[in-house]
Image (cartoon, rainbow over the protein chains, first blue to last red):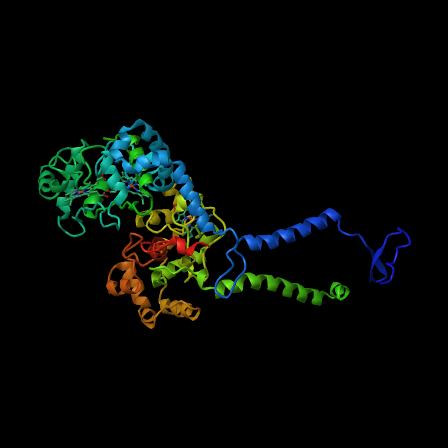
Length: 285
Length: 238
């Protein structure tokens, strides 16, 4: 090979490449940079040996340490479970009422339950369970299906009118839409319902309709029935909106709140924690 | 050689293309050829025509720009969203909706998490149920009638790229849309073709078959098809 050509002015070597009479000075990469490059190449080769990498005819090379991201996750989960075992096991073995009665577990349940609630329940029941139209408040002592922690646990596990086989279900008939009552009867019974909570004067005709058609679910005095999820109509708390129009609409063509089942989405410890959390929110019974 | 390359832009482009293609092919081709890429699971089926219509709206509206459908195998993700996504769960997706940006939460397993009522309220105005939401509302979906006379063509097109729709499914596509969205017609036959499909009037307006019906039918099936009872995750560690 010929001696590299030297640039007359700077005295440095050129690369010998020429563009339109201009020649490029040979400025090699810094030594440290080159070494880093070589090191990364060695690293990459080693990586393909240690970790799964190359495809083969029937699969791929598994690497030396038998790594898989899913396997790693399983190990990670097992380790977490192990580190929590002192209290997780007690959650698994205890019923929700036992947890609610145990100060130690209650503290864990409140912290865990709050997190579960914020992610899964707040979009419907609102922050801290304050509820909105169609989504009951969980922070008061007015319960549709029961406020004991076991009732709450059942409501959450299987849901209400959900597609789970063990869901709580009950359907108020569509008295207006299905013409079970005529318009006058609907108006009368609406007036009667309004009078139950002291909103208007008594309506004798409405009271008769109520006794015949509604009392079976809502009770003679309209205070509701938790076996059937029939709300108390004699208080100021309304699930599907307050006022004559809302009550009238419910009698004509009722809304039926749907709450998903959580037994297949959340693990049992989380369901227990959130049950205890909900129970503590307001009027747990 | 180097001198030639440096001075000829076309040669340089061709050589660059070849080099990059080798890298790409080495990464991608084996995945298509390997049997182990897609897990063997029970329960996966192609989308029902109504779900497919909803999925097309999902793509049209760019929901994937804010929502991923890919739960990665990390503890924080599975604790929040549920079981990690399997490759099998997107084997009938053309194109897949894995996404890469989570302005909103992952929706790969949103099916069954909410009621149809909630989805209706949320799609029309997200802030009516989640006051702090920054998701845009899509009120027009509740009023726009779903156009589905071409449902069979959509199924046919997908079968060209390998989705195993039967000729029976193609032939009954339009009827299946109606059956799933109204609960009327031959619902049992529809459910036999598409097990676990959610049936009913989804958007609370039984008079009209809207885009929102299709959208919610799609959302309600997401992540619910695979039957995990006999699934052994350790067979698919990778």
